[in-house]
Amino acid sequence: MKLLLQLEDVGITDVTGYRLRSAARAVALNSEGKIALMFVSNSNYYKLPGGGIEKGESLGQALAREMLEETGCEIEVVSDLGFITELRKESLLQISFCFLANIIKTVQDPQFTDSEKEGGFELHWVSFAEAEKLINSSPVKRDAHINIINKRDLCIVQEARKILGK
Image 1 (cartoon, rainbow, N blue to C red):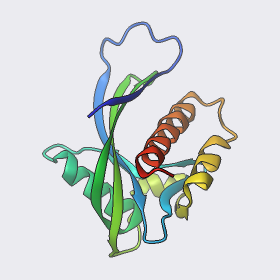
Image 2: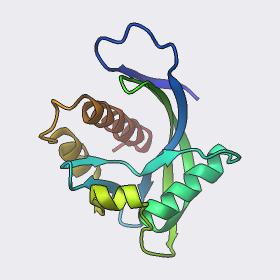
Image 3: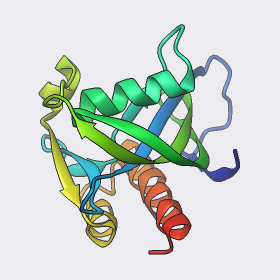
């Protein structure tokens, strides 16, 4: 898997005590060629579905679980896209493993965590062009945490587009 992007908050000089978190994310395509995009309404930004790999889970298991929880869909991985490292001020080094996947079937409504419900998570299905526009149009670019998410997810969407030739 290739490195797609390295992101870091400005001013980090010492990573002693940083926590490592591995995550799985996907550009998940439905039969209409639209991708799943999460709207975090309380913070007014968009992001791709995905999340942390839990203890004892494989990367594939975590990806399948996250897609089922956040989209209500079962997926089939088409390709790995690469990985992105994120060095954040909140003492976190996150490695996001990124994939392109097709939706096999919808089996349930999204099952958001309590934290995601509090954040106002909503599932949207959008075109690639619309996803890029929505991620780029986040009015909260001044928030370093959301800025990293925007850069990460824009890179993932663009890499998927390249692979698909869109």
